[in-house]
Image (cartoon, rainbow, N blue to C red; front, side, top):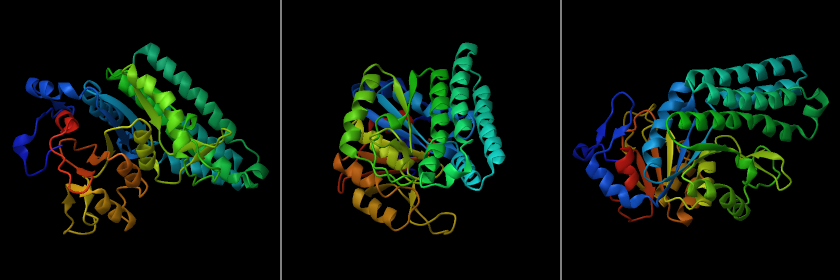
Length: 353
């Protein structure tokens, strides 16, 4: 991760794949970093379709060759809104519309699977997994109107909204496997324990950490990349919850906290954090380095790049947070860390820059 005004430090970039070509000297320089652990979080725009999933997988691969990696994924862009549309249709008694949309969402994910061009056996396995999940979604989309209109409506909304990440995690794990990275999908509802405030649940961090380490650490020890659903958790009695809209970055921070990650990289569709919205202000400038305090002030003031709960969690363990552009991996992005700390060339910068 190199400043834009320090191009001499850039490693070579493969223009075709968008993956960095790391020199022998750089491999030697990073050899001592194999005990490092990094969490990657990919947003919905980074995963929209097979081509983007394979590109995101190409960003994970060089890191996974040199350190332990856990990945947190969002639903593909637009899918959560469509799932909530199903819930709305059910509340209005439009069951046929709800079922048709559920079928269309399943087909959309099966189409992405086909475009991944997996080996036939792997293709069949993932297709069965997606189809089984799709049957569950179709069952949810058949809930009678009186159930959807009852006090349990919020609980139904969360169950429906969770399917986007649950589809996505299976596809991205398959994309990683296709790219030569050992990976398994993991549902965060297995260990992210929350209250029962459906649609805006709060995590119980200590319980989540204990359960999460039991699930994730053995996978990491076996050099397997856990691909974890963002956005969702579960009550202590197992009912699925969501952490609120646009909370998948917070999920990334929670998972990074669970595994004691050294760094959290939030891969998105912007170059980093700006002084203002670059789409609205010609004077907006990219901020290369921020303290936790400064970044939190920006988040609380309405900056849309980071969820405001990310930074307090990162600060507890002085975890470095990066905001980087999936589609411009050669760009440095924004680095957030302890105030006054100089984050000189870190291993992930050399692997991914």
